[in-house]
Length: 219
View (tube, rainbow, N blue to C red):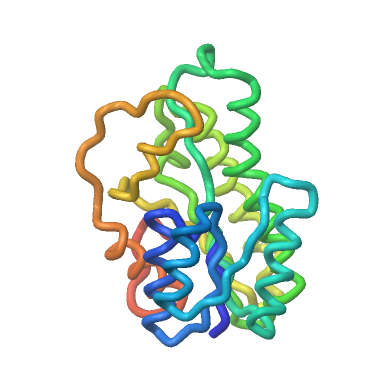
């Protein structure tokens, strides 16, 4: 298996990369934090992929570079994103656009780029969020982007069915990933303790591999 994990320097993406590597996959890792990316790449012996997902042509360049590094792709996991907290009225237009760019447009463009490489039994796994189906006040733009991604994944799955490529829409529960401590803007509300991201990553990777029962947060 040759897998690209985008957003592998995040608390969840890093665990997905580790879980895939533990199953014997050759993994390429992408992420904005160069120090974390280098550390993870050394840990799991993975090529590092650089690139800005919000730049014109950025998603294509990231996927192309990973395919060159691995000699092709069988799995693409899109786990990059960002969150902004607060009422829409209090958020700047720039912030709202950035949330939509990171959490909706970039995943769509990554999926499009992946179609050039994935063949029968390939997998695209989009990491959405529980707010896709349970929108929250104070997270309106983030909820909208994730709901839009889920709608995209449903339609895109139908488009890829004939090619034999599976499209997974993952809406994981709240996890202790540290995402809330690195918002694009705003202050996070008090949140109950979340699940261990490694456990959730293992569940996603099992679904990617087609092992066992799929959790209800993955479709």
